[in-house]
Image (cartoon, rainbow, N blue to C red; front, side):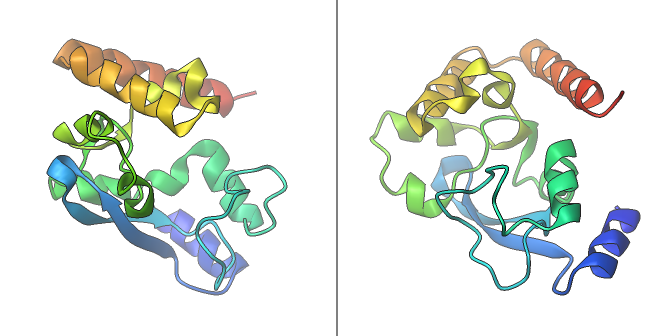
Amino acid sequence: MGLIAILIRLTSRGAVFFSHKRVGLNNELFVIHKFRSLHADTPSYSEKSGAIDDKRITPVGRWLRKTSLDELPQLFNVLKGEMSLVGPRPEMPFLAEHYEPWENQRHLVRPGMTGLWQLSPRRQGTIRDGISVDLEYIENLSFWNDFKILLRTFKVFWDNNTY
């Protein structure tokens, strides 16, 4: 993590980490941490968030996002008990406040760094598609399923980052 922090510091001005509130277990708010991937003083959310041509993303930030290494500081959230390695991604409060009651079921488990939705072909779908995948994960919650999701996550990471 130290090398990533040095890369960010050397290539762009601003803080190394980006922190913001997310909705976690039982709808409790907590602060999530990531390596900063956007230029300093830019809004953290826009309609183009994550798009290839998103000008807010720094060159190092683009690499961090491609490799998912921007998520590494969330290990501290896992150690604090706010997150798990596997589970639904923690939601932004301004989106969660518009959830229907059935959608809030995704907050019955600790949010995760990786999950079924991130590995699903439906990832490119709507927010509701993602919630449906999260609820499918919760219905089939088990250590074995979490283990398989972790293995698939490492495989995707490896396949996307090797020649």
